[in-house]
Length: 313
Image (cartoon, rainbow, N blue to C red; front, side, top):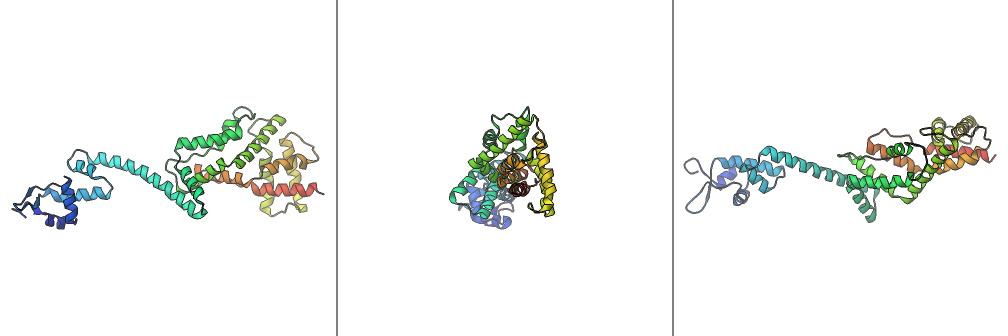
Protein backbone atom coordinates (compact mmCIF):
# COMPACT_ATOMS: atom_id res chain seq x y z
CA UNK A 1 0.00 0.00 0.00
CA UNK A 2 1.13 3.60 -0.72
CA UNK A 3 -0.16 6.12 1.87
CA UNK A 4 -3.08 3.77 2.53
CA UNK A 5 -4.70 4.51 -0.84
CA UNK A 6 -2.89 2.50 -3.53
CA UNK A 7 -2.20 -1.23 -3.66
CA UNK A 8 0.07 -3.50 -5.63
CA UNK A 9 -1.20 -5.96 -8.20
CA UNK A 10 -0.50 -8.77 -5.75
CA UNK A 11 -2.58 -7.14 -3.03
CA UNK A 12 -5.36 -6.52 -5.55
CA UNK A 13 -5.27 -10.20 -6.52
CA UNK A 14 -5.66 -11.22 -2.86
CA UNK A 15 -8.61 -8.87 -2.39
CA UNK A 16 -10.48 -9.91 -5.52
CA UNK A 17 -9.60 -13.61 -5.79
CA UNK A 18 -8.38 -13.09 -9.35
CA UNK A 19 -4.93 -14.11 -10.51
CA UNK A 20 -2.19 -11.60 -11.06
CA UNK A 21 -2.13 -12.69 -14.70
CA UNK A 22 -5.86 -11.96 -15.12
CA UNK A 23 -5.56 -8.52 -13.53
CA UNK A 24 -2.59 -7.69 -15.74
CA UNK A 25 -4.62 -8.85 -18.76
CA UNK A 26 -7.54 -6.53 -17.88
CA UNK A 27 -5.11 -3.72 -17.12
CA UNK A 28 -3.34 -4.05 -20.47
CA UNK A 29 -6.73 -3.74 -22.22
CA UNK A 30 -7.65 -0.56 -20.38
CA UNK A 31 -10.47 -2.07 -18.33
CA UNK A 32 -8.77 -1.58 -14.93
CA UNK A 33 -6.15 1.14 -15.29
CA UNK A 34 -3.41 1.58 -12.67
CA UNK A 35 -3.62 4.82 -10.76
CA UNK A 36 0.16 5.13 -10.55
CA UNK A 37 3.46 3.31 -10.97
CA UNK A 38 6.48 3.03 -8.73
CA UNK A 39 9.90 4.26 -9.83
CA UNK A 40 10.66 0.67 -10.78
CA UNK A 41 7.55 0.59 -13.00
CA UNK A 42 5.33 -1.58 -10.80
CA UNK A 43 1.62 -0.85 -11.06
CA UNK A 44 -0.36 0.63 -8.20
CA UNK A 45 -4.17 0.57 -8.17
CA UNK A 46 -6.65 2.85 -6.47
CA UNK A 47 -9.61 1.89 -4.19
CA UNK A 48 -12.04 1.74 -7.12
CA UNK A 49 -10.08 -1.11 -8.72
CA UNK A 50 -11.60 -3.72 -6.41
CA UNK A 51 -15.16 -2.72 -7.33
CA UNK A 52 -14.27 -2.56 -11.02
CA UNK A 53 -12.76 -6.03 -11.00
CA UNK A 54 -15.79 -7.44 -9.15
CA UNK A 55 -18.00 -6.01 -11.91
CA UNK A 56 -15.66 -7.34 -14.60
CA UNK A 57 -15.77 -10.85 -13.12
CA UNK A 58 -19.57 -10.79 -12.97
CA UNK A 59 -19.94 -9.58 -16.55
CA UNK A 60 -17.41 -12.11 -17.84
CA UNK A 61 -19.26 -14.94 -16.08
CA UNK A 62 -22.43 -13.72 -17.82
CA UNK A 63 -20.65 -14.06 -21.16
CA UNK A 64 -20.03 -10.41 -22.11
CA UNK A 65 -17.08 -9.53 -24.33
CA UNK A 66 -14.16 -7.40 -23.21
CA UNK A 67 -15.05 -4.42 -25.40
CA UNK A 68 -18.57 -4.26 -23.94
CA UNK A 69 -17.20 -4.64 -20.40
CA UNK A 70 -14.74 -1.78 -20.95
CA UNK A 71 -17.56 0.48 -22.16
CA UNK A 72 -19.66 -0.45 -19.12
CA UNK A 73 -16.94 0.31 -16.57
CA UNK A 74 -16.21 3.58 -18.40
CA UNK A 75 -19.95 4.37 -18.22
CA UNK A 76 -20.27 4.59 -22.00
CA UNK A 77 -23.05 1.97 -21.73
CA UNK A 78 -25.53 1.40 -18.92
CA UNK A 79 -25.79 -1.99 -17.28
CA UNK A 80 -29.51 -2.04 -18.08
CA UNK A 81 -28.93 -1.59 -21.82
CA UNK A 82 -26.20 -4.21 -21.87
CA UNK A 83 -28.28 -6.67 -19.90
CA UNK A 84 -31.26 -6.23 -22.24
CA UNK A 85 -29.17 -6.69 -25.37
CA UNK A 86 -27.28 -9.65 -23.98
CA UNK A 87 -30.46 -11.35 -22.76
CA UNK A 88 -31.94 -11.05 -26.26
CA UNK A 89 -28.80 -12.55 -27.77
CA UNK A 90 -28.88 -15.37 -25.26
CA UNK A 91 -32.49 -16.16 -26.20
CA UNK A 92 -31.40 -16.69 -29.79
CA UNK A 93 -28.49 -18.84 -28.65
CA UNK A 94 -30.66 -20.85 -26.26
CA UNK A 95 -33.19 -21.52 -29.03
CA UNK A 96 -30.38 -22.73 -31.31
CA UNK A 97 -28.97 -24.95 -28.57
CA UNK A 98 -32.42 -26.38 -27.87
CA UNK A 99 -32.78 -27.33 -31.53
CA UNK A 100 -29.35 -28.95 -31.53
CA UNK A 101 -30.11 -30.88 -28.36
CA UNK A 102 -33.44 -32.12 -29.71
CA UNK A 103 -31.78 -33.38 -32.90
CA UNK A 104 -29.09 -35.16 -30.91
CA UNK A 105 -31.64 -36.76 -28.57
CA UNK A 106 -33.67 -37.94 -31.56
CA UNK A 107 -30.54 -39.24 -33.25
CA UNK A 108 -29.53 -41.17 -30.14
CA UNK A 109 -32.88 -42.98 -30.25
CA UNK A 110 -33.05 -43.53 -34.00
CA UNK A 111 -29.41 -44.41 -34.76
CA UNK A 112 -29.52 -42.63 -38.14
CA UNK A 113 -27.09 -42.92 -41.01
CA UNK A 114 -24.86 -39.96 -41.82
CA UNK A 115 -27.29 -38.87 -44.56
CA UNK A 116 -30.29 -39.15 -42.23
CA UNK A 117 -28.46 -37.18 -39.53
CA UNK A 118 -27.70 -34.39 -42.00
CA UNK A 119 -31.35 -34.28 -43.11
CA UNK A 120 -32.57 -34.15 -39.49
CA UNK A 121 -30.16 -31.30 -38.76
CA UNK A 122 -31.26 -29.32 -41.82
CA UNK A 123 -34.97 -29.79 -41.10
CA UNK A 124 -34.53 -28.63 -37.50
CA UNK A 125 -32.71 -25.48 -38.62
CA UNK A 126 -35.34 -24.31 -41.11
CA UNK A 127 -36.73 -20.84 -40.53
CA UNK A 128 -40.44 -20.30 -39.97
CA UNK A 129 -40.86 -19.22 -43.60
CA UNK A 130 -38.97 -22.29 -44.85
CA UNK A 131 -41.07 -24.59 -42.69
CA UNK A 132 -44.21 -22.98 -44.05
CA UNK A 133 -43.06 -23.48 -47.64
CA UNK A 134 -42.31 -27.15 -47.01
CA UNK A 135 -45.77 -27.79 -45.56
CA UNK A 136 -47.52 -25.68 -48.20
CA UNK A 137 -45.84 -27.75 -50.91
CA UNK A 138 -47.06 -30.96 -49.23
CA UNK A 139 -50.62 -29.67 -48.82
CA UNK A 140 -50.69 -28.33 -52.38
CA UNK A 141 -49.91 -31.85 -53.56
CA UNK A 142 -52.72 -33.22 -51.40
CA UNK A 143 -55.49 -30.72 -52.20
CA UNK A 144 -54.71 -28.86 -55.42
CA UNK A 145 -57.37 -29.19 -58.12
CA UNK A 146 -59.91 -31.08 -56.00
CA UNK A 147 -63.56 -30.05 -55.93
CA UNK A 148 -64.84 -30.30 -52.38
CA UNK A 149 -67.13 -27.35 -51.96
CA UNK A 150 -66.55 -23.81 -50.66
CA UNK A 151 -64.19 -23.48 -47.69
CA UNK A 152 -63.35 -27.18 -47.56
CA UNK A 153 -59.76 -26.87 -48.70
CA UNK A 154 -58.94 -24.05 -46.30
CA UNK A 155 -60.42 -25.86 -43.30
CA UNK A 156 -58.74 -29.15 -44.23
CA UNK A 157 -55.37 -27.47 -44.72
CA UNK A 158 -55.61 -25.76 -41.34
CA UNK A 159 -56.34 -29.09 -39.69
CA UNK A 160 -53.12 -30.53 -41.17
CA UNK A 161 -50.77 -27.55 -40.70
CA UNK A 162 -48.10 -27.69 -37.98
CA UNK A 163 -47.22 -24.48 -36.17
CA UNK A 164 -43.94 -24.93 -34.34
CA UNK A 165 -43.88 -22.41 -31.45
CA UNK A 166 -41.14 -19.81 -31.08
CA UNK A 167 -39.62 -21.67 -28.13
CA UNK A 168 -40.41 -25.32 -28.84
CA UNK A 169 -39.78 -28.19 -26.46
CA UNK A 170 -37.44 -31.03 -27.36
CA UNK A 171 -40.49 -33.19 -28.10
CA UNK A 172 -41.93 -30.57 -30.46
CA UNK A 173 -38.66 -30.20 -32.36
CA UNK A 174 -38.30 -33.96 -32.73
CA UNK A 175 -41.95 -34.21 -33.83
CA UNK A 176 -41.39 -31.47 -36.43
CA UNK A 177 -38.39 -33.30 -37.91
CA UNK A 178 -40.36 -36.54 -38.20
CA UNK A 179 -43.45 -34.82 -39.63
CA UNK A 180 -41.32 -32.95 -42.19
CA UNK A 181 -39.75 -36.24 -43.26
CA UNK A 182 -43.23 -37.67 -43.80
CA UNK A 183 -44.32 -34.59 -45.75
CA UNK A 184 -41.30 -35.01 -48.04
CA UNK A 185 -41.94 -38.74 -48.61
CA UNK A 186 -43.33 -39.10 -52.18
CA UNK A 187 -45.15 -42.35 -51.37
CA UNK A 188 -46.85 -40.82 -48.34
CA UNK A 189 -47.87 -37.79 -50.40
CA UNK A 190 -49.39 -40.07 -53.03
CA UNK A 191 -51.33 -42.07 -50.44
CA UNK A 192 -52.74 -38.97 -48.74
CA UNK A 193 -53.59 -37.47 -52.14
CA UNK A 194 -55.41 -40.66 -53.13
CA UNK A 195 -57.46 -40.72 -49.92
CA UNK A 196 -58.31 -37.03 -50.35
CA UNK A 197 -59.36 -37.55 -53.97
CA UNK A 198 -61.66 -40.37 -52.85
CA UNK A 199 -63.23 -38.14 -50.20
CA UNK A 200 -63.79 -35.32 -52.71
CA UNK A 201 -65.29 -37.79 -55.20
CA UNK A 202 -67.64 -39.16 -52.54
CA UNK A 203 -68.78 -35.62 -51.76
CA UNK A 204 -69.49 -35.02 -55.42
CA UNK A 205 -71.36 -38.32 -55.90
CA UNK A 206 -73.52 -37.98 -52.80
CA UNK A 207 -74.21 -34.27 -53.26
CA UNK A 208 -73.06 -33.59 -49.70
CA UNK A 209 -71.10 -30.61 -48.55
CA UNK A 210 -68.39 -30.69 -45.91
CA UNK A 211 -68.09 -30.98 -43.06
CA UNK A 212 -69.80 -34.36 -42.91
CA UNK A 213 -68.61 -37.76 -41.72
CA UNK A 214 -66.82 -39.86 -44.31
CA UNK A 215 -66.63 -43.66 -44.29
CA UNK A 216 -63.43 -43.57 -42.22
CA UNK A 217 -65.19 -41.55 -39.51
CA UNK A 218 -68.09 -44.02 -39.49
CA UNK A 219 -65.67 -46.93 -39.17
CA UNK A 220 -63.79 -45.17 -36.38
CA UNK A 221 -66.93 -44.61 -34.36
CA UNK A 222 -68.31 -48.15 -34.76
CA UNK A 223 -65.36 -50.50 -35.18
CA UNK A 224 -63.22 -48.91 -32.48
CA UNK A 225 -65.73 -50.02 -29.86
CA UNK A 226 -65.58 -53.59 -31.18
CA UNK A 227 -61.78 -53.54 -31.07
CA UNK A 228 -61.82 -52.25 -27.52
CA UNK A 229 -64.34 -54.91 -26.49
CA UNK A 230 -62.11 -57.67 -27.86
CA UNK A 231 -64.57 -58.87 -30.53
CA UNK A 232 -62.62 -60.58 -33.30
CA UNK A 233 -63.63 -59.44 -36.80
CA UNK A 234 -64.39 -63.01 -38.01
CA UNK A 235 -66.55 -63.94 -35.00
CA UNK A 236 -70.39 -64.13 -35.21
CA UNK A 237 -70.50 -61.46 -32.47
CA UNK A 238 -69.08 -59.05 -35.05
CA UNK A 239 -72.04 -59.47 -37.42
CA UNK A 240 -74.23 -56.71 -35.87
CA UNK A 241 -71.26 -54.31 -35.90
CA UNK A 242 -70.55 -55.05 -39.56
CA UNK A 243 -74.21 -54.56 -40.50
CA UNK A 244 -74.36 -51.23 -38.68
CA UNK A 245 -71.03 -50.19 -40.12
CA UNK A 246 -71.93 -50.94 -43.74
CA UNK A 247 -75.37 -49.36 -43.36
CA UNK A 248 -73.81 -46.20 -41.92
CA UNK A 249 -71.25 -46.01 -44.72
CA UNK A 250 -73.97 -46.60 -47.33
CA UNK A 251 -76.03 -43.73 -45.92
CA UNK A 252 -72.97 -41.50 -45.89
CA UNK A 253 -72.29 -42.24 -49.55
CA UNK A 254 -75.91 -41.99 -50.59
CA UNK A 255 -76.29 -45.66 -51.53
CA UNK A 256 -78.67 -47.23 -48.97
CA UNK A 257 -79.85 -50.77 -49.67
CA UNK A 258 -76.62 -51.79 -51.41
CA UNK A 259 -76.20 -55.55 -50.85
CA UNK A 260 -72.50 -55.84 -51.75
CA UNK A 261 -70.65 -53.32 -49.61
CA UNK A 262 -67.34 -55.12 -50.00
CA UNK A 263 -67.24 -54.02 -53.64
CA UNK A 264 -67.20 -50.30 -52.85
CA UNK A 265 -66.35 -50.08 -49.14
CA UNK A 266 -63.32 -52.37 -49.00
CA UNK A 267 -61.27 -50.36 -51.55
CA UNK A 268 -61.94 -47.16 -49.64
CA UNK A 269 -60.89 -48.62 -46.30
CA UNK A 270 -57.81 -50.31 -47.74
CA UNK A 271 -56.74 -47.03 -49.34
CA UNK A 272 -57.17 -45.23 -46.01
CA UNK A 273 -55.33 -47.89 -44.01
CA UNK A 274 -51.88 -46.36 -43.70
CA UNK A 275 -50.23 -46.22 -40.24
CA UNK A 276 -48.23 -43.23 -41.44
CA UNK A 277 -51.43 -41.18 -41.43
CA UNK A 278 -51.87 -41.90 -37.73
CA UNK A 279 -48.23 -40.97 -37.21
CA UNK A 280 -48.66 -37.65 -39.04
CA UNK A 281 -51.61 -36.58 -36.91
CA UNK A 282 -49.94 -37.73 -33.71
CA UNK A 283 -46.87 -35.63 -34.54
CA UNK A 284 -49.11 -32.72 -35.55
CA UNK A 285 -50.80 -32.84 -32.14
CA UNK A 286 -47.42 -32.77 -30.38
CA UNK A 287 -46.22 -29.78 -32.42
CA UNK A 288 -49.45 -27.79 -32.05
CA UNK A 289 -50.00 -28.85 -28.43
CA UNK A 290 -53.35 -30.44 -29.30
CA UNK A 291 -54.91 -33.45 -27.55
CA UNK A 292 -53.50 -36.71 -28.92
CA UNK A 293 -55.89 -38.18 -31.55
CA UNK A 294 -57.13 -41.74 -31.45
CA UNK A 295 -55.32 -43.86 -34.06
CA UNK A 296 -57.47 -45.06 -36.96
CA UNK A 297 -55.40 -48.06 -38.02
CA UNK A 298 -56.79 -50.60 -35.47
CA UNK A 299 -60.42 -49.84 -36.44
CA UNK A 300 -59.58 -49.92 -40.15
CA UNK A 301 -57.70 -53.21 -39.84
CA UNK A 302 -60.64 -54.73 -37.96
CA UNK A 303 -63.17 -53.51 -40.55
CA UNK A 304 -61.15 -54.66 -43.56
CA UNK A 305 -60.71 -58.13 -42.05
CA UNK A 306 -64.42 -58.31 -41.14
CA UNK A 307 -65.55 -57.33 -44.64
CA UNK A 308 -63.13 -59.69 -46.37
CA UNK A 309 -64.17 -62.67 -44.25
CA UNK A 310 -67.85 -62.08 -44.98
CA UNK A 311 -67.29 -61.44 -48.71
CA UNK A 312 -65.62 -64.86 -48.94
CA UNK A 313 -68.58 -66.72 -47.43
